[in-house]
Image 1 (cartoon, rainbow over the protein chains, first blue to last red):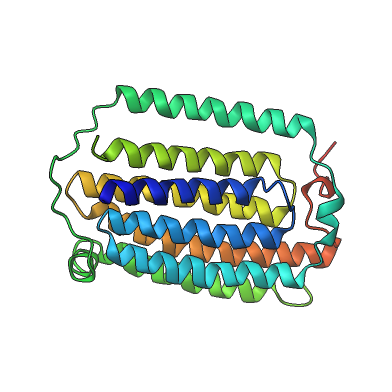
Image 2 (tube, rainbow over the protein chains, first blue to last red):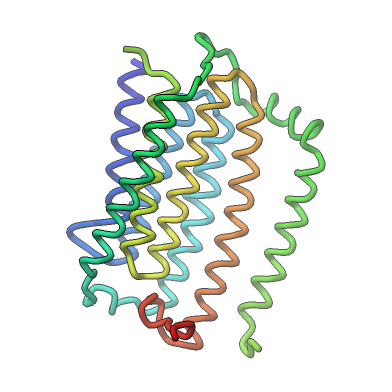
Amino acid sequence: MQDALFYTFAFLTLVFGFLVVANPFSRNPVTSAMFLVLTIVSLAGLFVLLHAFFLAAVQILVYAGAVMVLFLFVIMMLDLKEEERRKIKTLGIVGGLVSAGAILTIFLNSLLKAPLGAVQSPAVEGGTVPLAKLLFSQYLLPFEIVSVLLLVAIVGVVLLSKKDLK
Amino acid sequence: MNVGLEHYLVVSMLLFCLGLLGVIVRRNLLVIYMSLELMLNAANLALVAFSRYTDSLDGQVFVFFIITVAAAEVSVGLALIVALYRKRQTAHVEDLTTLKL
């Protein structure tokens, strides 16, 4: 059962991810954004299979909710009709395929050689309580720093979107 | 064959390569940005898989921080794209050649 679910979600993730990058039917950024939402939702499924329940919920709330709404909002504000008329250059495709293939070879080689040391019967559960305990004890300082970072991001965005940007 | 750490790592690798392909091939700033998100998500998947199969929660805390930073990064980046669009009326990388000699 678990294996079948893994293969389903992995397949869906990769297919939707491919459709984000290279949709043969449409070059519209809105289509890409919609497929990115589907990719993120199937990734959340994989997170559930890895017993990371809290992260699966956060993934859907933050990525599929907040971040994608932001993307769609910006797409709506900009007029991107022109994109569909432009041609993709062959050089770009060849360069992209070569570099992606090269990095995939490096990854696969290191995966084959690395001693992974995986535990046979993992017992860790990524529920809210154990994560919160870790977050508010061992990782308290990074947590506070991240809150400052969010404040900086808010100030930065407000400054950037002012009308008379100097 | 049982699904193990390797399977998740292979999915994460392939997703990362798809994102890299998108960053290089696509010419629209917004789509490039979405491909970047794809790469970030691939890294997250690898971290969660490692966290599960090494029996420690540290990886998941790390992913939590990555998601937070990614949200901040997206908001700032999109604000930059909007500011750029206001000035140059384009979101296409081939039109942004100010740095070209």
